[in-house]
Length: 77
Image (cartoon, rainbow, N blue to C red; front, side, top):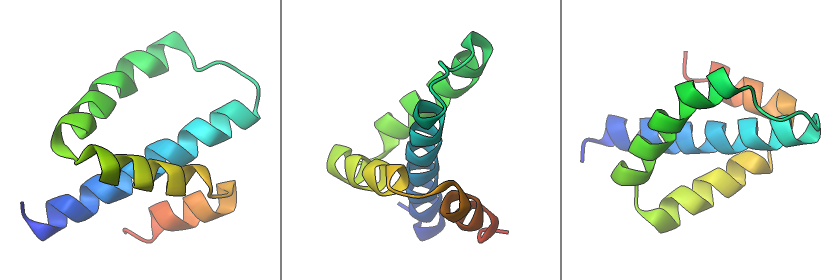
C-alpha cells in the first residue's frame, strides 16, 4: 500500500476516534444525517486497515483533547 494512503488512513482513524470522544463528552447523540455521512467512511476504513492498527489509532484519537485534535487535523495542511 502506498505510504501516503497509509498515512491518510492513520489520520482518518485518529480523527474519527477523536470526534467520537468529543461527541460523547458533549452528552449529545450524533445527528442521524451525520451518521449517514460518516458510517460509509468508517466502513471503508475498516476494510482498508488492519484491525489492530485501526484500534490503536482510534484509541489514540480518543485520547486527544479537542485542541490536540484540531492541531492534528490542521497539521496535514
